[in-house]
Image 1 (tube, rainbow, N blue to C red):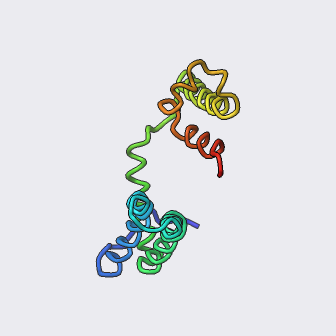
Image 2: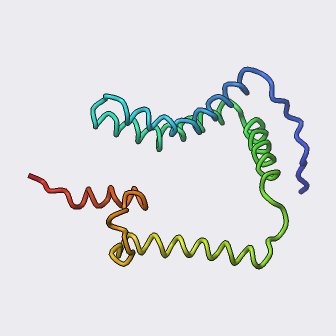
Image 3: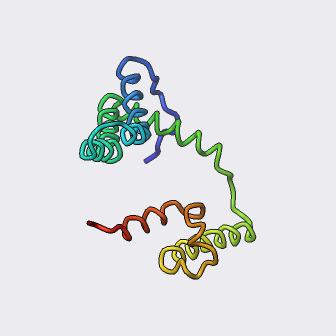
Amino acid sequence: MQVNKTSTYSPTGWRFRLGVTFFALGWICPLFVPLITSSSLSTETKTLLSGLLIVGVPEIFSVISIIFLGKDGFNYIKERIFTFFKRIVPQGEVSRIRYRIGLFMLFCHVIYANLIFYSPHLIKGYDANSMVMNMKNMSIKMIFHMKII
């Protein structure tokens, strides 16, 4: 079976625009979490809204956008996005030295992250500068070392 690479779909009409709007809103929803967390709402409401904006709403908006776009419209959007990213990503194989540099960077990060989490005392000056070196680790320390009265 031969697949036709050229699409005859033309993106016009209100259904296409509405589908693209829902698709974009689905990707933008998690960006509203800092606005929710900095608001004066109760903690329970902030938690619920933040969770919905991260986990529930983007998926629902994606399904709604597919309903409005249809198969042809969704494939058109997907094709446009993949075409954009194919232009950005370098083509061809990487050299051996570039591959090894990438592996070295990956393993350095993994070793450093495990070292900080499991034995931060091995890093000289880490306790004094832990907020500068790793904000997440500082918040974990504060949570686990809190005294509950």
